[in-house]
Image (cartoon, rainbow, N blue to C red; front, side):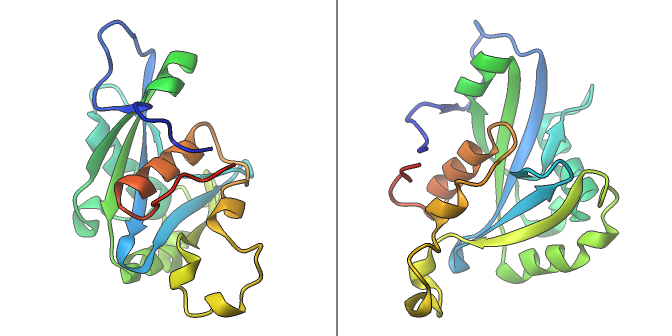
Length: 183
């Protein structure tokens, strides 16, 4: 699955009405080609996020969800940059999923994984977090890896809702994925 051009749009078109709004945040360390992916309590993989509460903006909801699910403060991670709304998912479900990404240092991502057990919703919604290497050619052990280790194979896991497409879009926008994956 690759992200189709125009799938993620900056705003919701006036002719499309969203029944609910949700947010997801891609936490990425482009310098070391790492992405944080959560293991949810329902057994699916995804990005941190959830529904926007009444009176909240999507950005505020994204910051709240980072704290609830990961115990991470958005203010210490870096700016949450909007990547748009998934038009395809909105049309199909009526749910506007606002995607943000945050450029992090590798040590910030590692600290989140180490401190995950202290997050307010740990074991309620989130069972764990994975640091996924998105460019195995850059990993020191790459020469020793068998062919099956790849981002493409990882992306074949079961993801919740449209999280797979969101992750791939964020990786592309961050310059971490040069060519679309053939899934």
